[in-house]
Image 1 (cartoon, one colour):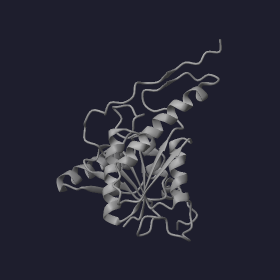
Image 2 (cartoon, rainbow over the protein chains, first blue to last red; image 1 turned 90 degrees about the vertical axis):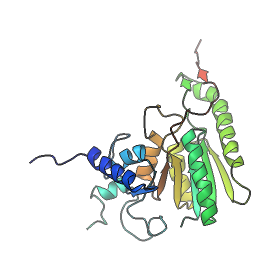
Image 3 (cartoon, rainbow over the protein chains, first blue to last red; image 1 turned 120 degrees about the vertical axis):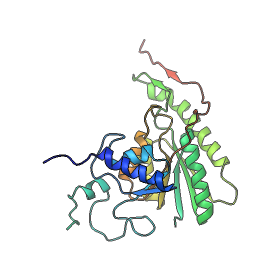
Image 4 (cartoon, each protein chain N blue to C red; image 1 turned 90 degrees about the horizontal axis):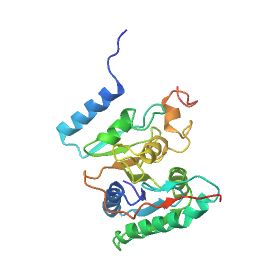
Length: 88
Length: 162
């Protein structure tokens, strides 16, 4: 077993690609676990992006607000870590 | 498209840029705009001696500072955009999250870091908290790398028990 990358690598690749494309906006989900300030893919992208960054809740509907009636916790970090009872 | 925008300001260059984007988005989407700031915690450059009475002593100064920040932000909003201002005495993190729910906002716009952030940090602690806990999309806006605008002199509060 060997490491194939780190959070920093993922963030760097996304940021590099965004810069190559001249992107004006980067859309990402929240980090999958609680992270210290500035760590985690999303936090790194939000901190270093050459463009604006919009972070979208994993339960969000078309206009951004969480969909009504969808089971599971409101906290995205809890949803992504697999502990949501609504997750199959 | 967003219809009900919440933007957090604290007088920093990044927050100013966030407000600019919020105004542009509100105009494009014919959306309502709500500007929020907090007088509930000290900002960058404020030193506090945590002793009895310190919070009470600092309160009026923080409130005036926040009020000034909020008024300056509201003055930047053109007359044709519906704007609401909120000055909360609660800490800004829970205040923003509570306001998202109560105000039925569909997006939050904020600067990547604020006045209270160490200059070398690329993402502020408030932005970090909100982007990980907001139930609605969070737009993180970066200001150009310019010097911070002049600010009021730091408030030094020392409370003595003597």
